[in-house]
Length: 325
Image 1 (cartoon, helix red, strand yellow):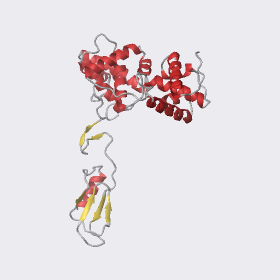
Image 2 (cartoon, rainbow, N blue to C red):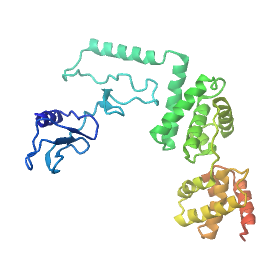
Image 3 (tube, rainbow, N blue to C red):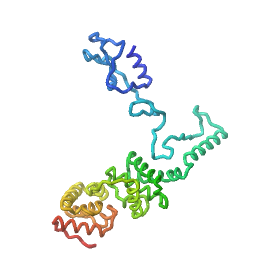
Image 4 (cartoon, rainbow, N blue to C red):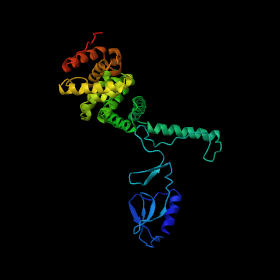
């Protein structure tokens, strides 16, 4: 009976609760005749504890795609999971189409009623000034994080930081795009993802100076301490943007290791230092790139790349001719 009940539940798509193994009643092992039979929930098998014979196997057809399961394996609702990247957190009902659940065409009166209900629902989720601000900010944040190819978890972290900044009234007198870029930069830095202010501000179409000011104010208000960045984390990204081989990246990382040992990384922008190491590595590996090309990939000036390259070559004792232009 126990096996038949479990099988019937499984055929209806009902997955047994999580656990290791539980004894079953009414089952007898056909090999040794023992009634000491357990159900292994991880493997979905009914096993005899005495001889180890597998008596039956249950196929898990999986849950309904509309059902959500919490960490304990319990069903908690129907629909897509909640997300912070939407104003309604994914709770709103989206009504589309001109047919009902039975496939019949709805009348003009019903369509007008549906449009009115949809309009009222949208107004309810953006009733206050903060919600209207979040609606605009989330649109900009989703666009920016998509351009940066950031994962969903980091997007939600950026939303949390922006929400805290709104509550601290940091958005007053500032463009929403600047504060959004600051929140994304903080989330990237805390996650160890190498995206500098110059790159983020360029994609957000705002001034890097204003984003940097917003970042400093946000760190002060939220009492967040960012970990010191490492120049080596920027190397793979810049090498990929410049379409250079692996040998250049390996040589640049070695140069940065030597520079850190000799204290050259102290007080210098890590992204510009990584750009200088890549520029020197391209010359050593005979994969020539101009200072303009490297500066464009690093989002800094050509003069900065030239000065950092001269400093690194001098400190590391590399005899290299670096042109002023």
